[in-house]
Length: 81
Image 1 (cartoon, one colour):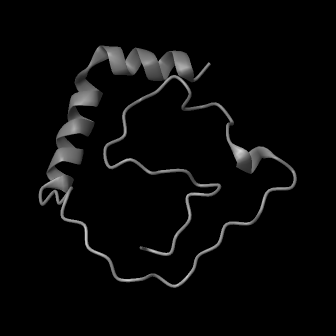
Image 2 (tube, one colour):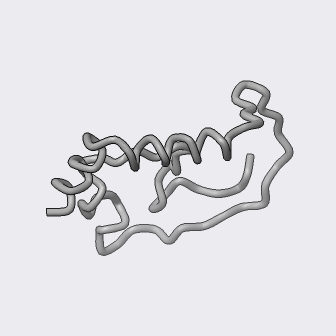
Image 3 (spheres, helix red, strand yellow):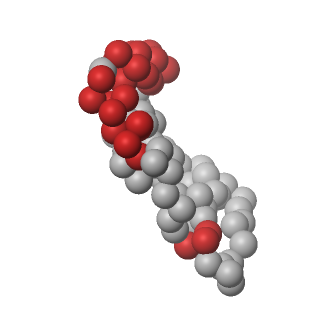
């Protein structure tokens, strides 16, 4: 495993889409007495299930599609209120 924690940071998606809760302050990090984020030494592991060789291309195409889609623009615009 990588040694990183999802604590306070959450899971970062490979491809992010606009969401209604984008601008909301959510999560454990908003509490006064949360544990600090930490890391441990990583250990070797293999993952052959989701090996996307063209991930950068997928992300780029998705970002372009989101930018050109009025529905995603509306979601982001309304969420910003």
